[in-house]
Image (cartoon, rainbow, N blue to C red; front, side, top):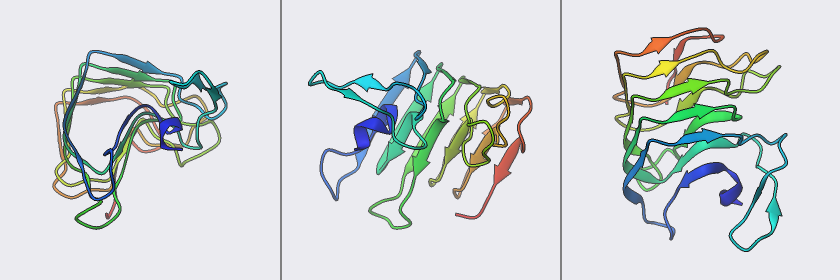
Length: 166
């Protein structure tokens, strides 16, 4: 279920639509790990996290601003998945003045402090501390087009910045 994919999950209410104009500001996001107990859903039932759970998960959205957040100790800090078509693409994500630390999974190179596949993502004034101990993940991994990175500080990680083909 999509609700178990992120502490905060941005996704549209209906197929064929996009979530638009979302602002996430000034929160500490921690603990979205498949290995963790999970969370209590709105109806009161306990749920476990999905594989590759994220502090913030993005699907089918545009014009998303994430700023002044501390994102720590998740399988993925921010994860944004595009589907390779106009209807499914993510666009216009801005990540500003955020701190990332200890995201990733020990012994794996598949989980990162941030990993976004989108059109026109901007990373500005962020501080990327080391990923999780024993993780072979990247600090900032981006699989998008038109990506901009400015005034960020990076410390550690298997790759500090990994820009790969979309």
